[in-house]
Structure formats: C-alpha cells, structure tokens
Image: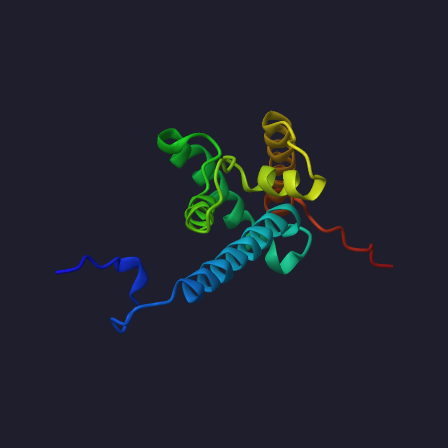
Length: 149
C-alpha cells in the first residue's frame, strides 16, 4: 500500500496539487500579515478613539499576557500569531526566521539585517507607551466640560 501525505489531501479526501497548496499557504501568509498589522496598529493607536478605548485596553492586556505570561514557557515576547505564521512560511520554504514579526518586516523593508535587540527595544518602548496611555485614557482622563455662563 503506497504512503499518502495527509497534508496533500483536502477535506473531501481528494489529492491537492502542490500549486494549489502553495497558493493556499501564500494566501494564509498574507492574511496573517494583515492580522499582524491590524493588531500592531490597534495596539499603538486604538486608545485615540473614545469608542475603542475599552477594546484597546483588552488588546493591550491580551498582548501583555502573550508576551509575559506565555513568555514564561515560550520565551518573553511570545506571540501565537507569529508562531502560526512562521509555520506557514516554513512550509513555503522560508528558513532562519527571526523571533519577531516586526524584525522580519523591518529587515525586508530596509533590505538589511537590523539588530534584533534594537527592534525589540523599540517595540517594547512603543508598547509600553501605548499601555500607559490606555490606562490613562481609560481610568484617569476626565474630559473637561466648558464652564457654564
């Protein structure tokens, strides 16, 4: 009986062509990139709009939990979204992926190998600033009303 690679069988039990599989993996990679960018953007700027401040604070807590609580077991700065995306990139043939999504794209954008410690420091400072701002606007900021005449 010939061996069958399960990763090349679709949900209907039919073989999937390598071309189709690569297209699906590339689409998933793109979707994970968009998800990453949305999370990063919202973590940095979600505190600006009053309607999204509570949700932003929740995202900050979730990000901190991944980085620092899950980080106890998987390494500080752990991100499950990055891990899932890296699994896809490895199936697409990419190797020697950095620990950080931000470093990966900074290297690609600037076409050079940027120091991981520098990227991690900038990331941590920006995250800390967004977290402090979120705490301030959610718990301490009181909008001043104009004085009545």
